Image (spheres, rainbow, N blue to C red):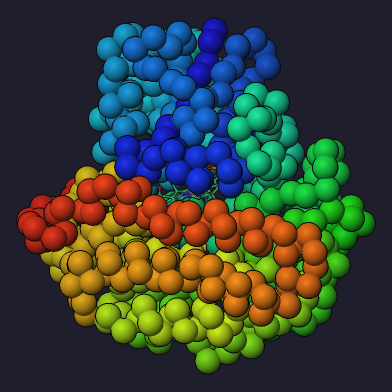
Length: 456
Ligand code: B12
Ligand code: SF4
């Protein structure tokens, strides 16, 4: 039996840009699914990440194709699925978008897997072999401990800057209204920290990425994880919520663990916007101090901001830029608020009839897909382009990186300069990555449609 596991490239987010090759780390989805294929099936497994591998649904040979689906890729996934099923190949869909909108997905697949697949995917494969494939599988694992290591050996190693990617936790305890995580995966699951550290110790090289979205939300667990990383004497980057700086003991453990960079969702400095987001635990007045604490511990900050939620008017761009420069954010990133289906934010906009389109390929974080309240769609789209350009012009890079205490470490300084140069290219090319700046937004106005309510 031949199984092909596919992660498709989205229609509108090209692989020609800097992120096509330069800054990619190997995602865990395909390698995890490959590791869960029961050995007794003796299956030949092929992983295809369309960011770096070619894929033609008209010629690919397989008995079963499993496709991972995030929202902006969904239209393409459904097209691929149609072509493959027309050729008699069984297509199984899974991933965040399928979990958020299972009844839409069911129409485009031989079978779907809702939620985490640790229990259901092996069961589905046994059913397939026994000619008993069901249409939908959604039994959630109660733990993510004790599963085989991801099959990283099946990925195209040369295509990624970093192969050492590991996951310790899934889900998040917070409930931000725009985020898919609480809607798709409401329960937080965590692996044994010692086993995570063992997995890292088995990896070649001195660096790794921890892709967990919110590992620090359970401070006790995160402290144990940092303690387990410390003796490995490796360097790592990951994600954390900004309130991690409240806990000085944890900050010390974090520093000792080898953490050198964190992606932090700062999102906004506007209290009204933070309220719309459900991030009332963010205290914008403390942001400067918190970023300084991270820098003082030798941690570079990849600060993410979201624009266009209710409460954001046109002045938000200048105010955010001023803050980014003052805080010396090592690597700022700017996104347009995106109401992913299944989230409270989506439901609010749907109820208020403010959605422009349900062409999911526009739902990438770089397009305006709903009518903003306190500025026009064009102001939002152009404001985000402008802030990318301003924050990444050479003088801004020099000021930010030069002013960050994290840059005192020569390796971090080199990494920071290199990534800033890559983002400078991205900022300059931004409009060409989005050749159609959501024509719906600027010309048609909100669209009169209702989406079927999903039972989530
Ligand atoms: C690594 C990562 C990336 C990487 C690689 C993405 C990729 N396509 O492979 C990079 C940095 C490139 C990236 C980019 C983007 N990402 Co991203 N990314 C992640 C992240 C942090 C981890 C993914 C991962 O490796 N998880 C570990 C594996 C083991 O878990 P998993 O993927 O969920 O898979 C499990 C189940 O879902 C299921 N499953 C998944 N697929 C399938 C398929 C089959 C057949 C089956 C049976 C089961 C199954 O089984 C697995 C085991 O249980 C997730 C957040 C998260 N924690 O999931 C966001 C996430 C997937 N990304 C997201 C987004 C929005 C994006 C971007 C659009 C962001 C942007 N504006 O640029 C781009 C789109 C890029 C693209 N076109 O692919 C969203 C998706 C939202 C949605 N509604 O779909 C997420 C959920 C983050 C979030 N909080 O919003 N991303
Ligand atoms: S945005 Fe971050 S903190 Fe909020 S729910 Fe999502 S993962 Fe958790």
